[in-house]
Length: 115
Length: 115
Image 1 (cartoon, each protein chain N blue to C red):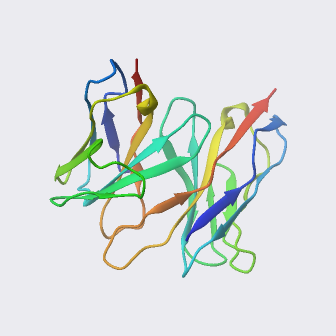
Image 2 (cartoon, rainbow over the protein chains, first blue to last red):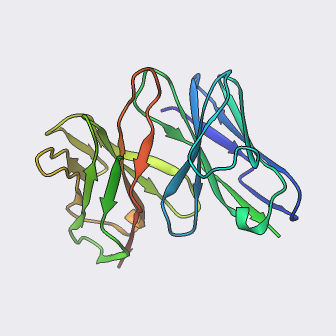
């Protein structure tokens, strides 16, 4: 099956710093990648949808200047949490989809802890 | 808008017991329906899916049938194992023309299986 990786798997940073999370599709070309946020014991909240070579589409209530998404190639998307604060601590999950398929393949997630 | 409602957990069962996790949905058009499983500390894995009414998805002993008349997609397994302990998410995807499909998730149901 299709494999999606995320790096790093966990990160701890100080308040005010920026953190970049990478999402890669290892064995297929991902026209579209999705970024989710998961709070403890809750469901996944879609943050944004990114299409290769174009600007990401953010869900209502998600600050695009806070969560910078880049999808520069068909195998890589990055999420940068800028000026992170403790309330940004969460589990961030990406998924990738080929345009013609009605299925998303999920990465293993990145746990961000902001001190 | 689209929504998914699933029974709240946690669900605690003894090994070899029968499992049912209820899921109902609201959507326009004809969505595809999914069950995802999330093991502790990991990302989501697709467990099974169904793309049209009366389809039955099955995998690893789990089954779910797409019931359009009751807008339901209940997950069942005849005999659970300790290794099935995880969080289960029901989700739907309603593809839009020319775009990859967004997933709408339920809140997740935690299953704990004991010896």
